[in-house]
Image 1 (tube, rainbow, N blue to C red):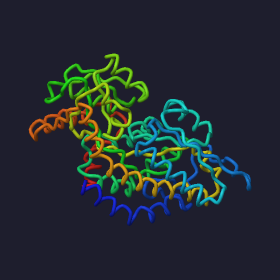
Image 2 (cartoon, rainbow, N blue to C red; image 1 turned 120 degrees about the vertical axis):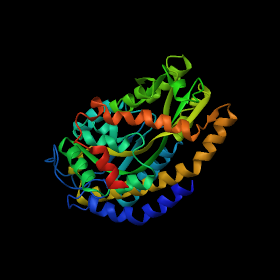
Image 3 (tube, rainbow, N blue to C red; image 1 turned 30 degrees about the vertical axis):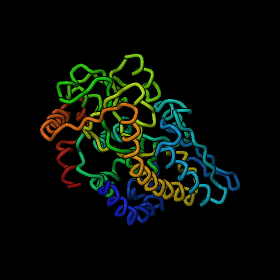
Image 4 (cartoon, rainbow, N blue to C red; image 1 turned 180 degrees about the horizontal axis):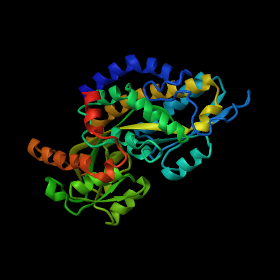
Length: 358
């Protein structure tokens, strides 16, 4: 808790300055938000003067979760600062469709902004960016925010833009991903053969394979029913999502393995972004960074309450000892030698990233 508050204070001091570079038309990706470099479809015409730009922000999380609260703050800031030239519609709980459907719409130029982690965006022209949400890559949140300031990160943002997707804001700390199951997992061996829901990306699926589980990709909205029916044995996600999706009703064990410190990025259509005025681009990105700080603080404030409420609903929180944690970590780190994960990475990427942020 204290560590999170410390990084929030440090981040507040620099993020607004960074977002000026990100959205100010220099082409510099800054803190990992949008620049004005022209990408795929960048010849779109600017929005006509006097027409309000409608922005649709879509996410899987339910109303009341920190992500939802952050999006409400983002919408408020955009509408307040744009003086009526931009309006925001929020679509929680996957109301606009699946992640892949939304990306397809963005690539067609729709004004949709969607949430995703780096391992998901890696499939859209920037394969190395996936390491930004890899297991045990960060020792603390400060290391992720340091990564956002590197030339390497700016290169990944440019690659996404060249493939039709514009990263708008990156400083949202989604949380630390933990394991929730219908059977207790106290040791690495307890994972053997358990069917664990993961997002649909190679990195996380291979990580769970290395730890002995049987991963299966599934939309977040299907996980509750699948667990209830016994189709899967558990899922992994940050505490806010485990609580917000009410998984405590169908799974009674959480193992605190801290396997991914998960940042998220919000991405939109590059062609749609280029149709905005420079001032609108700046409002969108700066407001997104400020809303990210708001989200991070809300998540920090609510995490202990989530744990308390789930324990009150019969959930056992399992804390592996140091020796067992080391075994989980050793198994997970094997993915950095897995060619299915690293096939499109430059040589020594893991070591290079660790060197940049340590």
